[in-house]
Length: 292
Image (tube, rainbow, N blue to C red):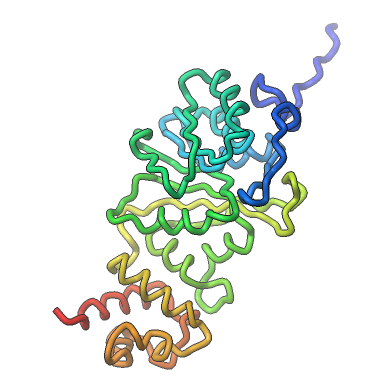
């Protein structure tokens, strides 16, 4: 009988070294100024990649790959191509090593994700998967949810946030977490939290828990509304969430009480009590009330 072979460690998702060795070799300490917290467990990065669904026929956009843990998970999961946008030049040599291990399947763009247009580098279908830098995550999400045309360039978003932000995305009316992010996300997407991660999964450990949210784009929004008007309504309503809507929204129309009533909303309601359908009705009513 042959002696039993020892199983390969689960972290061996490819032939590249463990991430701790990569970080040590390239001197990659996470920088707070860049919102960096590196996820080193390749079991977890592989699990996040799986949460993005079948990637074999997709290009994947990744923002803030850092030393490349999730990048490796996405490529090992069979992503057709990965486009990684990285602001921190220190990480580029580590990403180049991954590109060499997966010939023709990883392209790295150095720069700020808020300023780079990735579309010229991507072929549909496109999915977005990222452990987003904490300091730009919400802004990027709002941009992806509010393009001029719908459906967007992406089929789905699989994104890691601070857990508090993740809860705001999936929140329901009447809860403290319910706000503008919930309305904008749930208007055009099916949303769910697919993973919960403790601080100790990261280097350095953040002070808060993290969670991965999966957002699947709907072909059509759930209710008719103009995206720009809906953004203005939710920004005003939740910007002063303790006020009644007749006060919070008074700058949006001369007779806001009449507009609210025409949308089926009591002027004394507060923003957190209005469902998605109500905000869309209000956006339509404001458009109708606007002077032609």
